[in-house]
Amino acid sequence: MHAGMNIAVTKPLLLRCFVISVLISIPFLIFFLNLVSPQVTITTTNKDLRMRRGYSSYDAYIQRQLNKTLNPHLRKIWTTRDWNRKIHVFASFFLQLKENNLLSNASKALCIGARVGQEVEALRRIGVSDSIGIDLVPYPPLVLQADFHKQPFHNATFDFEFSNVFDHALYPERFVSEIERTLKPNGVCVLHVALSRPADKFSANDLYSVDPLVALFKNSSLLHVRPVDGFGLDTQVAFRKNLLPPPRTSR
Image 1 (spheres, one colour):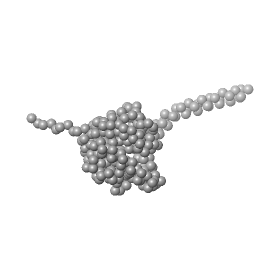
Image 2: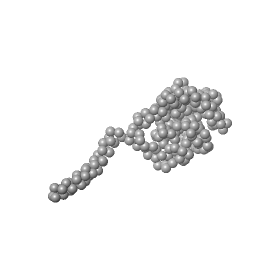
Image 3: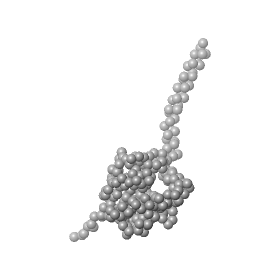
Image 4: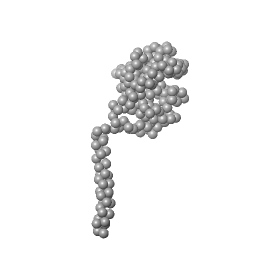
């Protein structure tokens, strides 16, 4: 009788000790994992710009973007079946911008996140010959290798910048500040973004209104917000970089 009671008492006691030991060890396990694989910390105060989690480091973020850009199946589609179709659509977007005097044949233009350069080719075909693109993977002669978080260009280089990959920016503030840095005063930036639905699985952020963009473009003025049918993106947002203040004169 006593032996049976001891067994009955011992089992709950062992289970209780096991649960307590697990609970105690959880904080140490979390601390260890953070040491081994620190998370990229991104803060945003705007509820309409939500950053996605899951990147353990900036290198991990870059590798995920490369997984899409280097996908041989996608690259074949981009350079064959989709090549002329996308060039035609981009050219129609850019022609409308020319009609609205936001772009001209004399513009020095940059396409950000251009992959295989359909946007660049579209610009060149409508007469904007001084055009180039940047992406993590180069595609000569249309696309140079570069990270859009740190453009490899001097200040005030371009008259016009276009991108449809804002959602891929892990650091939206850097993405925009680099655009404003490399735009000339009075230069124009046009973004295509998705507001009505989340972007693709390779995106680093989700945008739900243009308000965060207006806040990020600290040195520019909003020109227009228009609907657009741009390969899954639904909104065109245009900004013009403010003119520099006149230099002070000594008395």
